[in-house]
Structure formats: C-alpha cells, structure tokens
Length: 152
Ligand SMILES: C[C@@]1(CC(=O)O)c2cc3[nH]c(cc4nc(cc5[nH]c(cc(n2)[C@H]1CCC(=O)O)[C@@](C)(CC(=O)O)[C@@H]5CCC(=O)O)C(CC(=O)O)=C4CCC(=O)O)c(CCC(=O)O)c3CC(=O)O
Ligand SMILES: NC(=O)C1=CN([C@@H]2O[C@H](COP(=O)(O)OP(=O)(O)OC[C@H]3O[C@@H](n4cnc5c(N)ncnc54)[C@H](O)[C@@H]3O)[C@@H](O)[C@H]2O)C=CC1
Image (cartoon, rainbow, N blue to C red; front, top):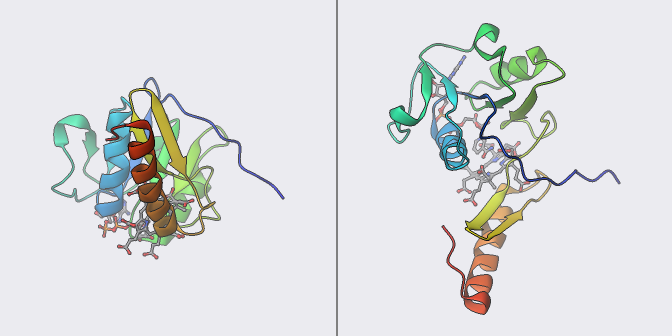
C-alpha cells in the first residue's frame, strides 16, 4: 500500500494562496497565519472572521494569473468545478490542496495540537476529518493530563 510522506513544512518564506473566503478558507488561513505566512486570498467575498490585516486580498474570482508565482495553493471555493480547474491549471512545481476533493490533492491538512515544544497531528488519510478531530481531542485530554501540557 502506498503511504504518504510525513513532513513538517516551514512555509514562512513561501508564497501561499487561498482561493475562496468562506468558512473552510477561514480555518486554513488561521493556521497559515500561525505558521508565519501572509496568504494571498482570491475571493469576491470574505468571511468576517478573516483578519484583513493579515492577508493580501484580491477581491475577484479565481484567475490563473493571480496564482502564477505561488508555491502552495489551497482551493476552498464552494464550486468544485473551479477547485478542479485550479488544480488542473497548476504547474508541476506548485503544491495544491483541493479541499473539496480528497483524491485530487497534493497534500491534506491534519488535525493538530501544538505547543512550543510539541506538535501532534492526526490524519485519517482524507477519509474522515470528523474522526480525526475527535481523536485529536481524546489525545489532547490524555497528553495534557499525563505530561502536564497546555495546547493552543
Ligand atoms: C481531505 C481533507 C482535505 C483538506 O482539507 O486538506 C478534508 C476534506 C473534507 N472535510 C470535510 C468536512 C469537514 N472537515 C472539517 C474539519 C477539518 N477538516 C480537516 C481536514 C481535512 N478535511 C482533510 C483530511 C483530514 C484527514 O485526513 O483526516 C481538519 C482535520 C484540518 C483542517 O482543516 O485544518 C479539520 C478539523 C480541525 C480540527 O478542529 O482539529 C469539518 C468541521 C469540523 O469537524 O469541525 C467538516 C464538517 C463540515 C460541516 O459539515 O459543517 C469534507 C466534507 C465536505 C462536504 O461534503 O460538505 C471534506 C471533503 C471530502 O471529504 O472530500
Ligand atoms: N476540507 C475541509 O475541511 C472542508 C471542505 N469543504 C469543502 O469546501 C468548500 C467550501 O466550503 P465553505 O468554506 O463552507 O463555503 P462558503 O460558501 O462559506 O465559501 C465559499 C467561498 O468561495 C468563494 N468563491 C466562490 N466562487 C469563487 C471563485 N470562482 N473564485 C474565488 N472564490 C470563489 C465565495 O466568495 C466564498 O467566499 C465546500 O464546497 C466543500 O466542498 C467543506 C467542509 C470542510
């Protein structure tokens, strides 16, 4: 069976684009900001939960020209045809996370617990994000108690 290659990515000096500005985008953007990234967000609308000062907002629908110099692209529109188009138009050198199609992504996001000296993550290989979240919370309770750890 093919298994994924596990890594921790340092994105601080990379160009990252998020396409779409809704609920899912807000969650991805929050994690990117914590990772030291100022993402470029391409979306006609932006959720009020997204801090404008921490992003570069291109208030428009996706067009290939907006993402040409991006290293990483996260597609979060509510139109799966557009998400597929973004993936299709990406070059071989761009890593794309298509959040609406687990079979058409270069990488997935993980359920995570982080502190200044520990990083724990759970993945269900794209199969069940809600199980990943639940498991993360159970691990959190156990590790917090056993190792007296505080997680964000
Ligand atoms: C494949 C993957 C791709 C990717 O995003 O990279 C993916 C895909 C999809 N998620 C869906 C649903 C939801 N996902 C969440 C939440 C999280 N999703 C995350 C990861 C991943 N989600 C990747 C694989 C993870 C793995 O391998 O286990 C987490 C872990 C990490 C993060 O996003 O930061 C984060 C929990 C963070 C935390 O709190 O710990 C919630 C909300 C909730 O549970 O609170 C809902 C319910 C929404 C609702 O119903 O309201 C749907 C169905 C869409 C639909 O049909 O509507 C798809 C599409 C599909 O399955 O194809
Ligand atoms: N991976 C994950 O964790 C999850 C993924 N999903 C997937 O993510 C998609 C988005 O979900 P939500 O954020 O809840 O939707 P939403 O409706 O809150 O937001 C959609 C956003 O996409 C923007 N948009 C629409 N067309 C666009 C275009 N052509 N170019 C740029 N931006 C465009 C809209 O302006 C809006 O900001 C869902 O369709 C679903 O497939 C849903 C739940 C969880």
